[in-house]
Length: 163
Image (tube, rainbow, N blue to C red; front, top):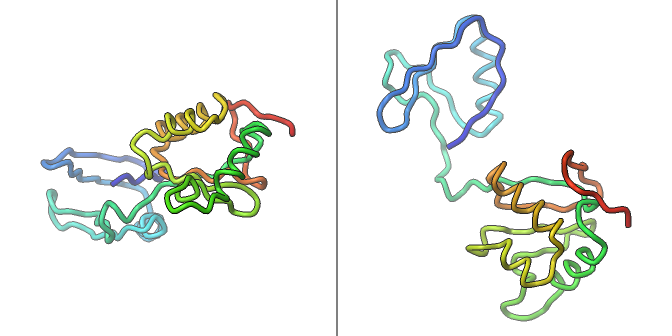
């Protein structure tokens, strides 16, 4: 489980416990605000009476979570766009349309469908820029779904194409 939030506090003390658990003591923060942020991320927060108790619980099993990111189709070439459109419209029993889906304004790539999705994209003929984008997003954000959308944000530090 990963939980990230930005808090402004007077002091934060973190104590590492067994089994990957941590105890966090935060001074100078409104507890209601912290609970709201944790709940907005889909977790529940319990206040521990003593260190060592589990404080943050995840109500869903680990496989129920899928990290995703949306970005602009400007990060792929026109040839990539044409290829993704063709692949997403296959009507075979076991075609690429099972993990590359057309959304009307872009494409959803389900990266967890293959053990090595970037290698699969290479074999299908997608450009190096597209594959570099996917591999960077996978490594940096542990994403399982990439939504390439015409209305998505242009990510800084990545190549863009004007087509």
